[in-house]
Length: 564
Image 1: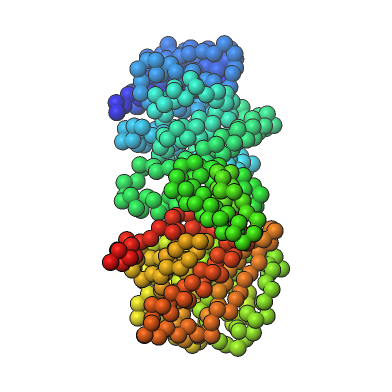
Image 2: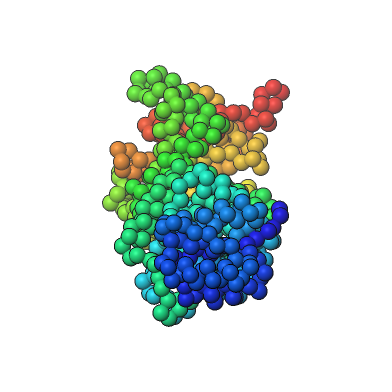
């Protein structure tokens, strides 16, 4: 990309500092486009004299004061029309360190498609009120971009790539006043323009003139953030998951970072605004995945069809497998995410749960007896995990597949380190894992594992069971593990019913013996019992099923066995 830069200076009644600024810029030997924003006669004369003395200056005038934004846009338009590719904006109040212009221009040459922004390093001259106000704007810009890429949106010391700026100004009405700097930068980010940040010293000269109008400009900035916030809502999924080419690491690392950033952002929204505002953010995200996630959407409708058929056969009420109800299914997943955050944060208390046989649970713990707890992806087990922290003598060991646990574990550790310590990441259960878990059981601890997911690493270690009217594949691993532990086994589910979570804690077996003779038949019977319990809960709360894939698809090894 060609790089032909110039300077653009908007000026409204800054006659004292402009001469020093022009003199400092002279070292770069670049054209200087000054836009007089309807200044008074004294400033007009100063600018005219400068233009006569300095051949690098090109002076333009607005008939009346229209605001800093209008003046900058006029300067960018004139620069683009004159054949320049980039423009370094410099404010006329003398706050910018002109010696840093070289650093900004060097970054612009290296990254010509980016906006290169000065990130202020303030000294003690900055008024406290202005400094605190900047942090409020920083926060809203991070919300509006779902990113921390923009370090400071209010500093006007920046290099613009002119082509995307002119395209934006021709199609979008930007703020004309003090709201301009933030407005154009956020919207350029929305367009996919990358941001580079360069630290620069900023001073507030003694006796300097400021045109910031406390009430009017704060009102304009508040209006701006309202517009940008709702503009972000419309772009939420694309902004949250977009892949930026700024970092050239392996694609898998970028994918992981994007997911983590998205979850961290949602956590921040939850912490700052609570669950009701959080739900506003979730709607466009869920809508995006519903529209674009064909596989998940088809799996949802197929599942709802099986629910309808099974419920009808039992004379139970059911929802039709429509697109509207599939979307409701997706939204239920989003609401479960809110509840996960609430649990991690400690916002869901014991009194928020309905736990009918809690005493049996407490008696088991008090007796020092370890156990295996088998759950599922139906419901929200994180609620139980978070609440278990407050029970004296209870130690959970949650088994999760490594390919999913690492990312998840990192996020949990940031929010609640105690919860993250419970996780044991596994790609497959081997002898060493079984020995470790056996020791924990003997110490009175609990092992938690889900029974409704098979591992891609061991597709042959499965059992078929009738689930919602058709054969589905379940993993053997959880039940073999429970057998090896030689301890009581319980089923545990946490379902939201009528706005309140209900804990299902059911005794499954004192132990699970699996004889060598007829081993497969014994395993099949155990898995079928689990599938029956899971089916009953799915019929009770159908929208809390969070396996958005073809659950009834037979693995290749199973199909080949049947053919053989």
